[in-house]
Length: 188
Picture 1 (tube, rainbow, N blue to C red):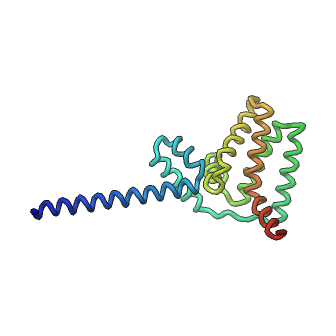
Picture 2: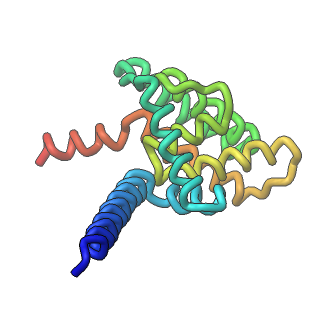
Picture 3: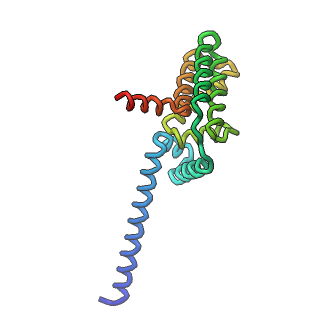
């Protein structure tokens, strides 16, 4: 066989190998992003309009999140936040609209005290999507309800849902899930 034919075959083989490796790397990266972001992965891909743009956005979020450290709250601060949440939740019976607004503010305040930058809602929800991806969409929905509340376009069921969603994120930020699992391990 002619030398030039062997050279073409060798180049083609190298190109195929490079393409296979690149595909495997992309697949591994995609799987890692899906594991890390859960349902937020699909939402971001859909919102971005393409897989490449969406994955880039997720990578950028994760990089921005790495720029700051969160901190664990002292037991006294945690107790104050728990008491504030109980007060907010109790107000829901008599003043559900006010309680939803208070819950939104309380979650933002808790995020700030835990070390999250809280300048804008989009940034807050992006950071939640990195650390608590299973709660990000619920947080967005609860915040939308809180905003719609100012226009008086919210039902009692919407308010209840907002409180449930705010409570889930509040508990995760406060570390109550971690505390409960530690108590169970000590008791068991």
